[in-house]
Amino acid sequence: MLVGAPQRITEYAKKGFAVEQPYPDEVRTAFERLMEAGYTSRLI
Image (cartoon, rainbow, N blue to C red; front, side, top):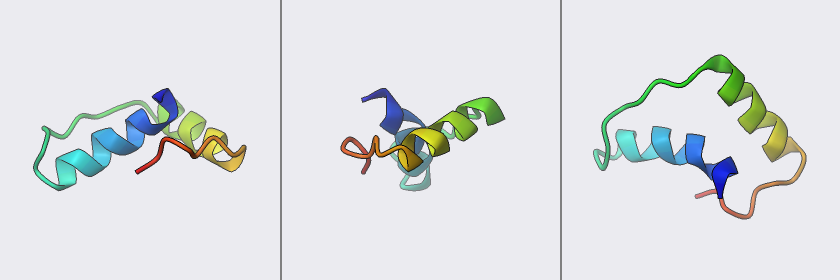
């Protein structure tokens, strides 16, 4: 579930469902690495 959180934070804000929230580059890097490792079942 947590792997998809950065994606939801970004995408929901784009659609107007939430307020845009900044998050550190380290989080973005970790998100990308986890996606590359195959943790994609909870992505939107």
